[in-house]
Image (tube, rainbow, N blue to C red; front, top):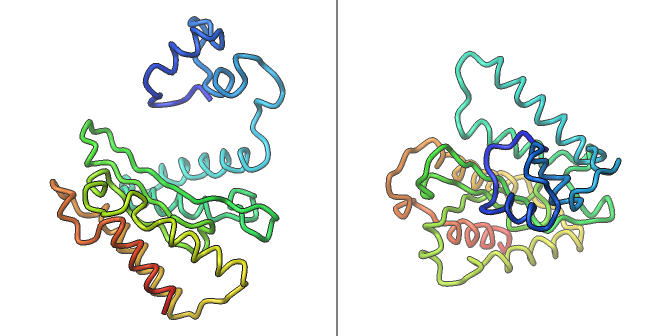
Length: 213
């Protein structure tokens, strides 16, 4: 709660102005923003939040045992596994009576250049089946639609879930290749992200076409 590397602009001054933080104690994001500065037992991690804490601690320990420092792709792949963990309650599927809206992973290296940042979205409610697709802010000028066709993809996946349709092995393999291609972009250092082979909208459309076959 206090071990953070970056904060939203002006969040500390906003909390101080609203009386959620006195400006002297160490800034506790959850206590200030989530509880209005009040201390209570619900601030302690529980349920899926506690599971996430365990996962992240295990990830940090695992990374420290590797012979060479892990790269960006390794971290994103590990986070995808965490977000797909249904047993811990982190991944919400229809099977649990509640459905996630979508899933996101952001890779934010220590760089002031926003083009170096990568975001991965499923654009669908079930990250176990739907795959992560890479988005950069350069993609906003490459798509004719504001939603990059993500709403259409979301509705297709919801229809598949509600009808309890089962995808073939070949389809699942081709879906996995979409995510693999997106992750491969992290291995390639490009100075101009606008020249990527596929934009976020391109990969969303590719997934839509695949599911509609």
